[in-house]
Length: 86
Image (tube, rainbow, N blue to C red; front, side):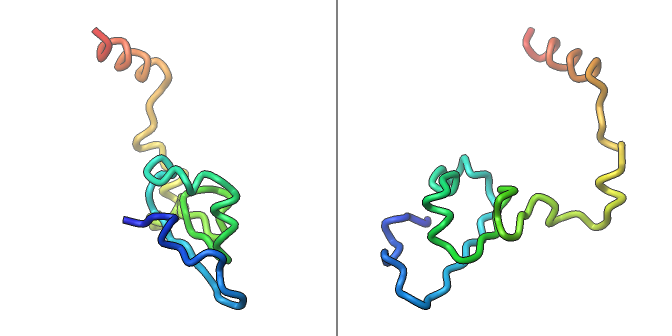
């Protein structure tokens, strides 16, 4: 498991650090803070602010973004939510 205390701070001059983190920031709360993310020269996370956002890494094509295959109406969602709370 990654721990911030494992980093050799301060980062040695001229050394490049890259971060690849595919999980939700909730699993590593420190990655939600700019002060931590700025320790790295290059970031690839699900955060939109990353140098290389991974939010669409598993898409095979733009057609998957446009597809309505798994889209549910608000009414369907509300019905499911109501039945799940009973």
